[in-house]
Image (cartoon, rainbow over all chains, first blue to last red; front, side, top):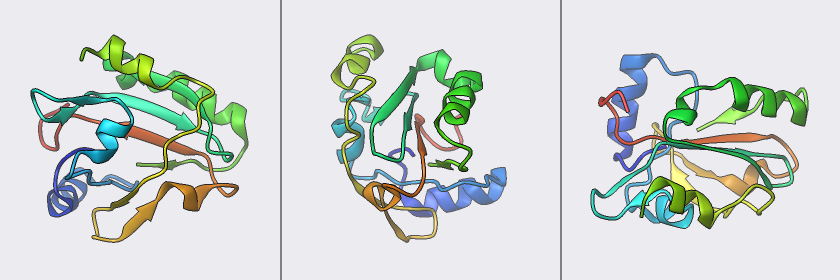
Length: 87
Length: 52
């Protein structure tokens, strides 16, 4: 997810061939809610949250760590064998 | 707010705040709709087309 408008996300999905849901937080409300909004720049920091079926946050990666998906992958595998839904 | 401070506002073990947003096809997606169904990876990135 990012603060891009959804038509931009659509184009981004088409160009990258992304196989997951891309959410548009155009109003920046959710970025603010999750404490990842850079108020000055008006964009969200790079951060990844792993949320279990009960809606509990079980992992948070930020910045460069969020680019390394091994931890997130392990975290997901630990949760269940169900496929996670990326956004 | 820097990243370290941002990370402090939500912690592991906290309930994930619910929200509803549009996906790339303009369809609404609500986080709580996955409750009891699926685990969710929520990845914030800076902007599309920036390599961020």
